[in-house]
Amino acid sequence: MKSFKREAQHSQTTSEKGFLELAGREADIPLRDLFLQFRELVSADMAWADARKARFRKRASYIRFVTLLLTASSTVVLGIQSIPARAEIALPMVALVTMLGGLEAFHAWRPRWVLMEEAQGGFNHIRDEMDYYIVTTPPTELDKEVLHNFFAQQQAVWDEVSRRWVEFRKLDRSPQGDRGVQQST
Image 1 (cartoon, rainbow, N blue to C red):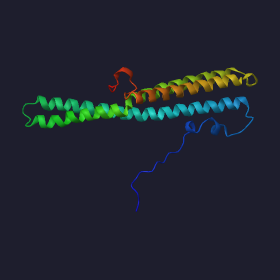
Image 2 (cartoon, rainbow, N blue to C red):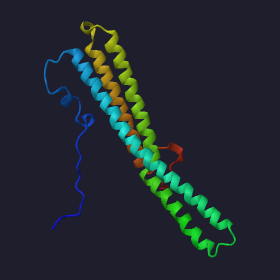
Image 3 (tube, one colour):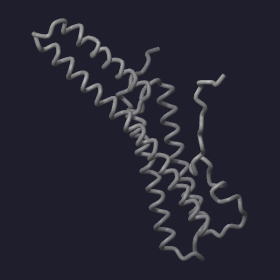
Image 4 (cartoon, rainbow, N blue to C red):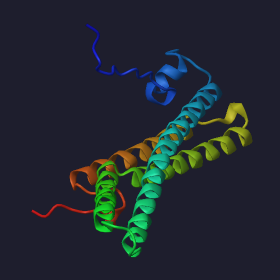
């Protein structure tokens, strides 16, 4: 009997595989090539954040649109005296608005969209600095310590994204800061 359970078909992106896989596990790679490969990894990080940003933006926008449509519709229905049983029509609409608000708060699509926007901006900044350094520095003067600094900046972006997301989940609130709802203890 065929199972109806959806199996995860997750293929790892370049960003998820990491620098070792991108560099091909080779030793003694010329420093310029290391810079270029690390730049490719940062670009993959940007693409990863952009894909999630688009998904979260789509869902947040959909929820916002449907909520607005239902709110306006229920108000119109309640305002038209000639509609029989208007409360019975409007009440389910209002209930759906409440349910959608809870769904958005639980999934936090808008705050995750903003978080991915910030991450993408951080990665873009790193890549721009790398581009400037690679283009303006002769290959013989490239410094491995500068590459280490770029790596540290990339890790700082990931650490901040992870820290904020875990912090908000622990507090049971969305990453919008003060707008989230905290559980009282």
